[in-house]
Every structure is written in structure tokens, then in C-alpha cells.
Amino acid sequence: MSTNRRQFLKTAAAGSAVAATATGLSLDAPLIAQDNDAKLRLASIGVGGSRGRYNRGGSIARAAAKFANMVAVCDVDDLHTEEFNQAFGGKLAKYRDYREMLEKEQPQVVTIGTPDHWHVPIAIAALRSGADVYCEKPLTLTIDEGKQIRAVVEETGRVFQVGTQQRSSKDLFLTAIAMVHSGRLGDNVNAYVAIGGAPGDGPFESTEAPADLDWNLWVGPAPEAEYCEQRRRMFRWYFEYSGGKMTDWGAHHIDIAQWALAPGEDGPTRIKGTGQFPSSVPSDLDWAAFLDGDISLPNAYNTATKFSIDLKYDNGSLISVNDRYVRENENIDFPNGILFEGDKGRIFVNRGKLQGSPVDKLTESDKAELNEYIVELCHGKKPGNHMGNFFECIEDRGKPISDVWTHHRTMTSCHLCNIALMTGRELNWDPKQEMFIGDDDANKLLSRKSRDFG
Figure 1 (cartoon, rainbow, N blue to C red):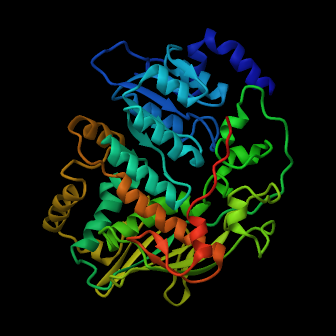
Figure 2: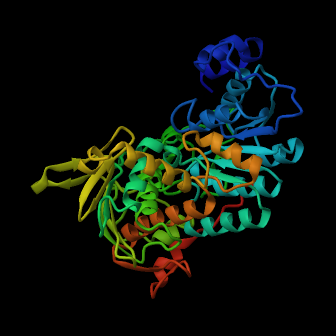
Figure 3: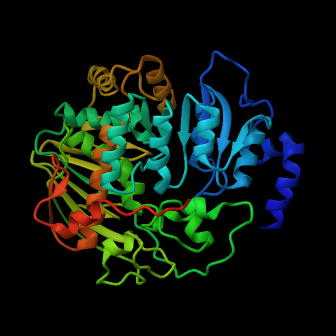
């Protein structure tokens, strides 16, 4: 256990001001847990992680606390738990094990910001405990997990929002979708997506886990593994816990592209592409055995570093998924974003801009028409605040902007891309039966074993 971690845990209880400064929060920020019976009881599971102490888990928890009464925090890392607790005046109930927390605290609302491999198991437990749930993306580790969580949402009738906040971006992504749907790019629209490559570093040396971290519980249902900081902090580059860039940025951009081009329930039917894995991944790897934990690889990143994959849909649409999209003869080159292209024009959108000739030609009347359509996309609700949309749906029991059905469909496409890279061949997918056609080996990759971790 490092000196810094020891020192924090020794002094945290004595100084909420120290914690507030450390988190960048104002001392009078409205985060102190309130004894307000009129507010919903809120608990947050996973409040630190892959991007340092204050990752998305902590961010979504603090955003939710503006709408509900935070009563409990749960994290396998005592440092994360104590830092978060002090930001709420040190008044929260603290837990390592989410099962104990759900049983004892019985929260009405739960946020989940754990590493990806824990999303579905915790979400299912929270839903069945009676809570409405906001869970960070990517929701699933496998296609079968998506089927499981979809069934539990339908079984329980709880409100479930996924943290794909691009779905609440009115002036960028929602406008781009509305332009495609309204025919402003013409017919035969395709999407060319770039989501960035991934590192291939390693192998890394294993070390002793910090004493204030429950490493066995962090690993949870994934294959048993020795501790190392890269495995914990950079889990997105390990297939044991995530799916690389495909399920990281793909969960955002593939989602938007698919919403624009194939807004129904059907997914792609043909998947084909090429890519590269780190040198630590053998070319003849038995992927099913590895993902089940029956064989192991060196302690190194193992998700795809480069890729170019085509998803083809029965409606004629194409979504091309790339680490970087380049079309040299037209001077097109971008590392992150979506290019929508039809027979009447093309537009480009990412988190910084929406541009193209069809955008420049929009009149005020056009914009007003698009805004009306955007409200329809948002199920009649005003877009803009992703967490606010979740709590509005808790109030009226409506469907949130990033519901479990559409996100399962998005994640299925992300997983299909990874499976195409693993098998190295073109795949035929039945989106209604949710299985590969005539490919038993590919079907083995739809699910994986869960470790008994106690």
C-alpha cells in the first residue's frame, strides 16, 4: 500500500475540506447527503477506476446526486470509497460488496461505474432489488449478456439508462441523425466510422495488490489473474474485462451510425474485415478457450490495435468501422468521428463539430423542423441532459433516450466486429435469432464462463 494511500485513509475522516479540494469540488458544492425523505434514495457502485481516481463512475454518481439523496457508496477500493464519501460530508454508508449494499440499503436508484465486465451482473442484481439503474457504457461483455439484461429489464419493469451521452447531444449527433432520416443526404446513405486504435503494450510485471483493494472482487466473474496496475487501470485493452476500442468508442459512434441508418430492431447480417492484434496474441489462438479462462496469455494488452470492418444490413446500408478512416483520393482522413454519405451530399460529425454542405444550407425553417423531429427521437422529451432524462423517466416511467433494447443492439454490432477479427473470416448473422448462420465456432463466442469468486 503506497504512502499516499495510507496517508489519505488516516486523515480522510478528519477533513472533508481536504477531500473536497482533492476532487476539485467547491466547499459549498451541493453534494452533501441530505436527510430529505421526499427525494429518492440513491447509491453508487464503482466511483473510481481506469482513468485515475475520478473517472466516469464518480462523475455519473455526482450528476445523479443533483436529483436524488445519496445514501451509500460501494467500491472495491477503500481509497475511492473514502474520497467519494468525504465529498458528501462523510455521511454515506460505505461498502465493498454491492450485494451487501443492495440488501441493507435498499436504494431506489443505483448508478454503476465499475469496470465493464461487472456491468451486467451488478445491473441485474440492482434491477431485481427494485432499483432503477443508470449504468455506464459499454453495457455488455458478450452478446448473451445483452440478452440477459434485456430480459431482466422486461421482467422487472424498471427504468434503465445507459451512459451513452452522445444520444443527448442535440446540436451534433441528434441533428446529424435527423438530417439523415429527413432525406437531406438523399438515398443510399452509408456511414464511415473512425474510433481510434488501441495500444499493444506488454507483457507487464505482476505486483502485490494494495491492501485496501479487494482484488479478487475486482476480478469477479473474469478468469483468475494476478494483480498489476495496467490490468486494473487500463482494463479496456484486455478482452477479459472489455472489448478494446470496439466497445469503448464503438459503443458511441456505432450507436449513432446505426440509429441513423437502420433505426428498426434489426442489426447487421454480414460482417467482414481485417485487423491486427498485439504480438502477444498467437495467430492460432483458441479464442473461446481463452475467454472461458481455460488457457492464458501473457499479461499484456490483447484487444485489436488496428481494424477495418464492414457491417452490412438487409436494408442496403453499410457501416464501415475503422481505427482511422482514410480516403486519399478525396483528402478524407480522420481518427474519430462519423462521415455520413448519400447521393445528395455528406456530413461529418464528432464531439467537436457537425459540418458539410447540407449543414451549411440549413435555413431557420429547416432547423425548426429538425428540432421537432429531435423531440420525437427523444420520445417527446427535451434533449440535452442525459442524467436528467433518466430521472424524468423515473418520474413518468417512460423510455429513456439510451434504453437497454437499442444499446443491446449497438453492443451486438460492436461484439460482432470483434468476433469477425477473432475468427478472421466473413460472418453471416441472424439478428432475429441472435446467432451466426452455419458457424459453430463463432457461436461459441456469444457467451463465456463466469468464475466462481465467492
